[in-house]
Image 1 (tube, helix red, strand yellow):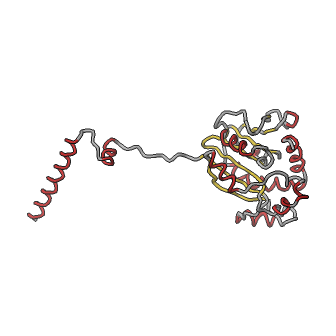
Image 2: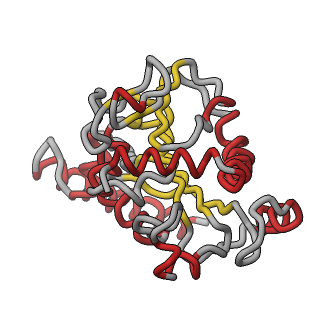
Image 3: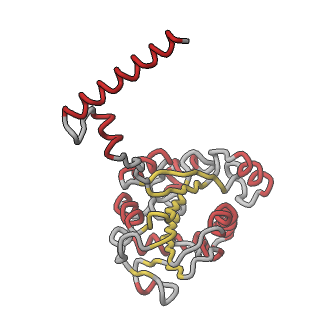
Length: 259
């Protein structure tokens, strides 16, 4: 299955009643994160309608594998494993259910991390292999239908991929709660699952940031000398300092005897 074919099938799913209900649940989960993000540029890599439209970031890019599938003139038409964007140029990157169907998912993750700014956010949404749809995904008949196609990955595996590109997971949220075989739009289950962040939702939302190198406080010349035992004045200064300390101790002892 080509990537263009996967995108067409994915768009049909997200346009269906089930897909639209799940999209609304994901939008509610992503909303508090997006509403507080400011910046100049964002990018959504996926097949569904734009989820970042509530974000105050000025320029929002979408993606398409071919020009024929581009839904607007500003869509980024490219291989998702080789984004034609400068390093650290985006304030928010959302990878929405695309890791499951691209041929080289780790290349996509590397590129998404590369174009994310140091103070930006990398958000990954995917199907939860431990959610209500997990049994359906394992059934051979279901695997031929969307969204069960593709390779579902656990969050622990994505944590390893993110660590390889110097990103760390800040939080993992779950959404799309339902009983096996039940309807997606179950307000009671969604409220309960979101409140306690139960890891059995149909989808997960990973928020990752670039790792920051620990800042070492700069030591002054005299602090370095005290730690290393060296002095820029040489052995004479060390000898003079030791003699001064002995004289101080002797004077203190004499004062104690007088008292």
